[in-house]
Image 1 (cartoon, each protein chain N blue to C red):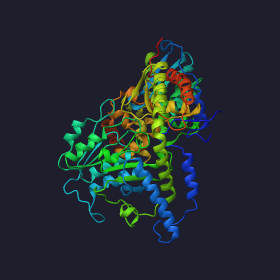
Image 2: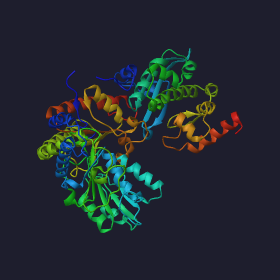
Image 3: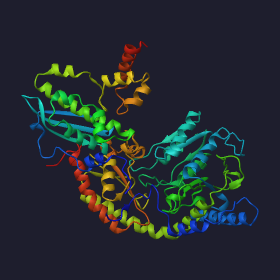
Image 4: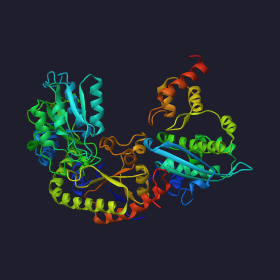
Length: 394
Length: 200
């Protein structure tokens, strides 16, 4: 069997060769960055170097970077501001205990929002239009005087659709609320600038940018309040307790550095391949819809729905052909509901169950796209023959 | 390549489904049974040819909209029923299908539950077309949850196995997790059986 083809880069990415090198080098740097002796200082220097590299990727200052154990932890940390009891920080949102977020956020935001609601916080969840974007006027109206925080993802993991974050941040600030964006899928793929966008908080994850799993970062802009989620240590300037994951952090720094160098060229290349893929699918397969915004989208993400077939079945047929894609659909998670993101777009249910996400990355070649375009049409045709929900054209 | 989440039998029936209705015309069959709907993510249709003198199933074709386990479970069921009498086929349960498939992951069990219900609907259809309604009554209880085809009997079994609240019933049967329309009716049936067996 030929080398399997990986087209699921929004789920996770392989390590960049330079990141591997950085990790290998770090394996012998075992000092605790908090120690004052030479071993500690060596580790500390590497840690701070990584902090500057991560800051550089997203237009932040080094001291604005708080390393975490994941993007999910970073998002949880930001949302925990609203239930802060001021035992470990000096932040004060006063009576502004409310949250405004969107229906297409990652579950780590949506579930935390539900939790906040259960605790009695006012929570507003904004819908999106058919192309996956929020209505900025609706956002403006949702930010009442009781809202303390607005959280809107930069680019969606399933559709790749990009929101107008600078404008959303401006609207939030005008109304007196703090602004957070989950940029886990956007950073390293499109230009992200915490300072220019004027966001208070921004979330990053290493394993989406060819770094390792188990390390993320929260950008906390200077002057913005933060309330630690994990207590019991002075690390990260008291913003996140726990001895630093030095190997992971150094690897994330190197990953960020590599992204800065490779991003622009790669975005062009992947954008072209994505177009070729989309055109190829639309030409060779009937009854297909593309989910998400045609322009405001990540260069390497394509989400398509096929009428009358179920996403998991497509995924597993492609897997058998050596091609890895993903589906947010029903059966993969064991629930009977299609993906919350695809449903939020208002995709008709007979299409919604049949969506797959193809996400390209560094290792993707034109040949990979050609092979997918060759394998996919007969798979869809076969599944439609089996399907009771697809009327065959005679 | 590492192991599949599904058994080899499921993989085989998923990638090489048997007895799919292809060029045959639905009207050439003696009975049709449909269950589930697209909204729930799974739908199955079974077509039967029946020898009228022996009431034996001579051919079984099907179409399924759904995930790997839904496709595989219908495929294997279509092989199981050939040569069976309608009476024998009506006794096939979801457990029989599960066993033939070599098991399914827990969150996929509802897929196999659909297969036996589609078959049963087809058998009922045959009886109805041939004025044999009395055979349907002897087959037993009626369906409560149409998305997942869960019958009164399934609810009674769940009660006997320990379900008392609607949440416990849902945990066991996944009843009412499709369109949700049957939830009130399911609660009524649940209350009836809890009362019948435990006087609660």
